[in-house]
Amino acid sequence: MKLAGATALHVLLDFSPGNVVPVGRLALDRGRAVLEYDPDFIASNLRLNPRFAPPRPELVWAAEPRFFDGLHGVFADSLPDAWGRELMRRRAIATGLDPNSLTAIDRLAAVGRHGMGALVYEPARRLGEVDEVDLDALSREAFDLLAGDVTGDLSILEALGESSGGARPKILIAKNAAGHLRSGIGTIPAGYDAWIVKFRAPRDRPDSGPLEAAYADMARAARIDIAPTTLLASGTGGPGYFATRRFDRGPAGKRFHTLSLAGMLEMQWEIPSIDYHGLLSAVRYVTRRQPDVEQMFRRMVFNVAAHNRDDHAKQHAFLMDESGTWRLAPAYDLNFSAGPAGEHYLTVEGRGTDITGEQIRALATRQNLGAATTSAIVDQVTTAVANFDRFAAAYSVATSSRKEIATILDRHARELRVTPLAKRPSRTR
Image (tube, helix red, strand yellow):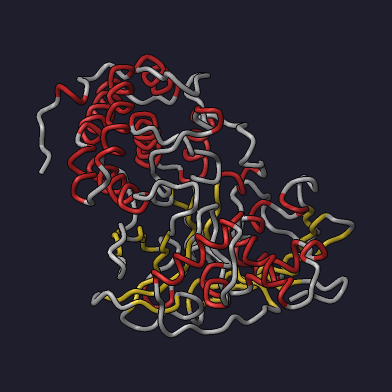
């Protein structure tokens, strides 16, 4: 798992079988990553980050060695977050290594070919294959691990979850139309698609899976671009497991280069340091498409109306295909969440809470969104959020959760100056 000292990683963009572009060599020098581009990548006119200068033979150093364990932001995006990092730490201990001795380069080698997006790293540590996936068993193992009660074999959980991002427990699977599940690590078999399954952490609501599924349907009703989702049944009669199809994977082994806003701007997402005006401006700069700016504006309104305050800079991303074309990635991790100190990570006109229609319209004006477009987006989003109870009931979200959340969403409706939930026509089943 640990590389020999001064070992450089070979970085490649694996867009699809037969279409692999060598990026260059990546190494650490006194705790700071340095990238040497491959001549083929220089000739390709591709960019790993739209903010980077065109690739040249000169060495490219990480902008801020104190961030991302010394890596460039684009490579830090390949590393797992809290959940995957904990699995990686435990695997290091199991193999007799001090996890504190692992460098960022070591962890990228552990990710190898199995990270999110199209970036791959060689030499890589091979992970074992898993033929069958038992969601209930893996959910119990994940819950026990985070609760500090680990007695069983975590090898399957490690293999399926170690390279995943985010803080909540999750695994990477392949799923076919009949609902059969198998490992989502490595090559996805014909007839299967790549999916992510989330498990409940000890701090989560017991109905966290159904609630996220309800929010996904509510987002679609608000005309937000979101990948297909489903609620996978539990064999024990539990509330089920939220699953979403991976947007960084396509049919026949196709992969998309994925870059978060945090990775692009080289910023620590844990520290609120950008607002929605900055995010919208970044979308315009990267994609150069007004519909993408309007789509992100729509997501902002949804996050405010639906109390999704976990909207930090790593929760927004861009995709690049093999031609070098950038577009806005689908929305993800949409849920009822409190945010830091009860506020949004990204502010709207200086406000992280108690955001009103006045701030929404002021930001729309700064972004050159017309009054008619702004009004239509706000109306469409708030109409969808007003039907929260119908979406929640469809997935059997607990009555207590539905009442608690509806009360808060009703307050946001008043702040946005739309008809409160209680006065909307009832459409519950």
